[in-house]
Length: 77
Ligand SMILES: [Zn+2]
Image (cartoon, rainbow, N blue to C red; front, side, top):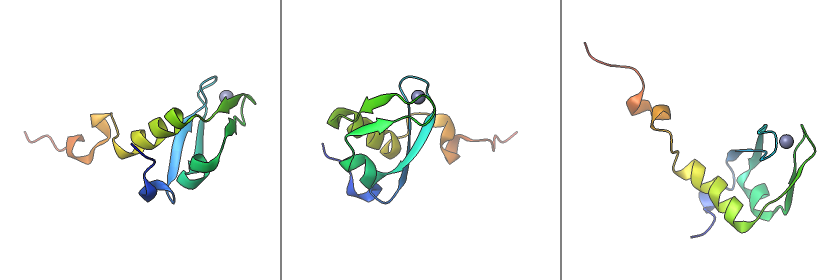
């Protein structure tokens, strides 16, 4: 498994493990960054390869079915 090139130009959202504040970074930033410093609580998070994979993976395969257009509204009565 590798970091998907198609997300390098995309804005990826991830969350500070300490305070869960959302942060948005380009995929290319995440790929090359070594630490992420949360702007809300100043916690330094080491961006391990596994963590990067998880962030990329979350964007390639959103795991909440509710967010998929096919599942929102439009129930026929
Ligand atoms: Zn934080």
